[in-house]
Image (cartoon, rainbow, N blue to C red; front, side, top):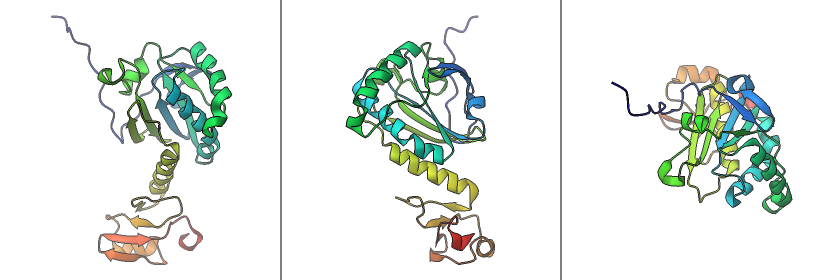
Amino acid sequence: MFNMFKRKPKAIRIGDIAPDFKAETTTGDINFHEWIGNSYAMIFSHPKDFTPVCSTELSRTAALKPEFDKRNCKIIGLSVDSVSEHTSWESDIADVCSNFNGAPINFPLIADKDKKIAELYGMIHPAELDNLTIRSVFIIGPDKKVKLMMTYPASTGRNFNEILRALDSIRLTADHKVATPVDWKNGDDCIIVPNVDDIKAKELFPNGWNALKPYLRIVSDPTNNQNK
């Protein structure tokens, strides 16, 4: 008996290996995992080319690309438009980018006309945008695992400074036994993770910490000179 229902891709969760794929982009064909290499990567989708909110988002992301570069993070966008549509739209963005503290597009855009990648990453919510890609963000590590996932409604432009802040936390906590508290910014005090006991903490943080509670130990950013 034939299966009448199309099998849905498995839902992606933080810590999963990001699905690999081949794609046509505005800068040439890629194999996703090979393209990431030893970097972090942000893959993010927008609903449609030649639309207002998306134009502001991509121009602002282009302006922030040097900040992503400093964090060893590549950027790649995606929608269900074609390469020719992407390329034509880039000209429009260059015309208006200065109005939104932006820059001309300087990163590849994936052409996902058949929606295979969007469906693989759960970027399509039929009830939200009539089978167009929603505003999804995935941060993927050099180990090809998903580190962060965000989804925004179509009417809400993303804050890419917040994504950079989260990337700073991801990179810091990958290398040190700390977590970052609410409203943390790069360089702020951190929290020693609970599975590090005080004996081990004295080795890792010889300048000490402030124990607000036994489980809440505030410590200076371990990348600062005093804790190196």
